[in-house]
Length: 242
Image (cartoon, rainbow, N blue to C red):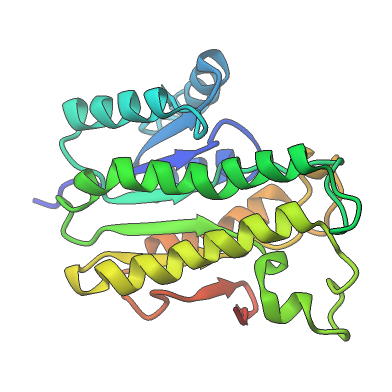
């Protein structure tokens, strides 16, 4: 008998996260949506449950360690283990910008949410992930977090100077690299995935692809059974240089 695998998707109540939750559930996983707002999380889970999918929600604010700890306890009590963590929760800010003029408060918030928040969730969920036969962490990153891309004058992203957001994703990529270096030999797989320039409310609907299309890249990496992508930064078009 093959036991159903369990996934936690942070920021899973809307945008890419909601699509990741849907697609993972459609692939047969039991999915837990982590959301800051209880009602929004439960509403998102209810919509998917109405389709016959195994989805529910927990309150989880990546900047509030008490909610992270409570979510981990709930998952331990109800599931006993966790097979997949998708660190998807993230923000952008219109107050972000070039290093010379970006709002310092915006930069702090971006780093606290996009990097420190992901690290906090990862640390809290590691004991549960270690109980899985093939634990996997997928960090939803961005090509904007690549130092090589940021420094390439021929890159279409060269002019995208948002020091807070870009630095937060670069730090998230470092989390991927160091998780793989520290825990890869235990069987844990950590991957950074860039879903692409997705149309979500994160940037006011600006983008080239839909949330479903972007989520498909994340889900493909999440469902992969091997470790070929471990410690790498991947996209729909191949590897992204660090």
